Image: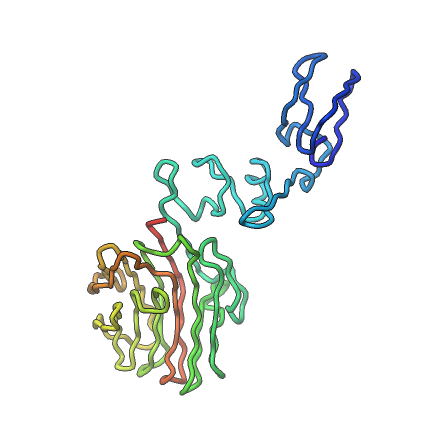
Length: 300
């Protein structure tokens, strides 16, 4: 008997007592048999759900699948890793190895795969959950059409005393100690405030700010703002920040040109655990667009 399913041994009569669920009799010769366990793919007549073994542990109710099932259908968002030779929560496109160790995690969001409209609750990233938005009246964070089938994220602020914030929070043990955040951003009007970057427990970690003096700054852990360059309306800026909390260094590139570097607080337990994109409560009547968001985590 296997998973409450009975399999007949044909050709000869066999009698055995004391069998428990999950164990089968395995033929070892023409007329002999022995106790054993058979792979799922050696048992016929079972549907996929019959191949599922439930158990309860500290992670709750979990499922187990055959290697073939994982490779072909990605059951329960679990994937077979041919390098570590074991199941993993992370698909091959999202992680890389040195030997059998997973050393980097990455996601690249063009927003093209998300639904038009409010971004809150959308996205299901393997180590960053989904988008969480807090918006005042007349403010929003939405996926909109950029060009053709391409989409982007647009924050709209039409509240002089309000703002909008949307964020991703990294899972435990997947915070960024060393890594890269890259994105394209533009602002629709001068004299406004918008910002985007990495945070650690609600505190600035490495933050790009489009300020109301029409300049772009990077803000460090102590809220020091370092001038990078001026900006103009409706121009896309390609921004890339390399962060290293072990040294406290964060060099910044705009449009593939090195602009400057900030010093980050790099106490022993420091890391980035959020991406935040937001407008400012004292600015109103503008949009802040973001596209091509890329995050690389170099230490897992």
